[in-house]
Picture 1 (cartoon, rainbow, N blue to C red):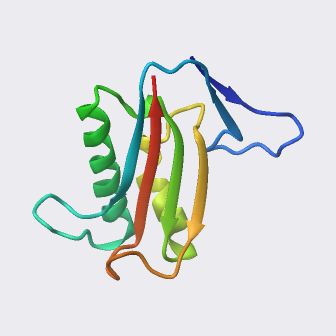
Picture 2 (picture 1 turned 30 degrees about the vertical axis):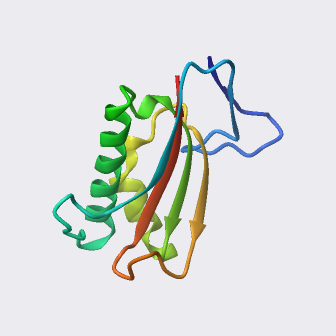
Length: 126
């Protein structure tokens, strides 16, 4: 069972839950960082395309496990430029179930490939 926790003493977020309690999960899926690169090696142009590719890759891993974004309990998101936050949120909105999962957003200097602008890790449970 998955319960989203929203203590009244914590400022609300439209995207994330401060905590997600998982009681006796049947399965837990740990998803490695997904980036804006297609199977044929194309790196997306700009934050919107890279986000769409990365969330598509994330959905593919979830589907392989018989899961969907509704079962994501935690995201860790890495952006290389804080100016890309708005574009990331707009392009990735369809991968943000409501209520939102727990999450962490980090701004980093660079990802493994300097062309990459975003990387998304996730944990899902059912």
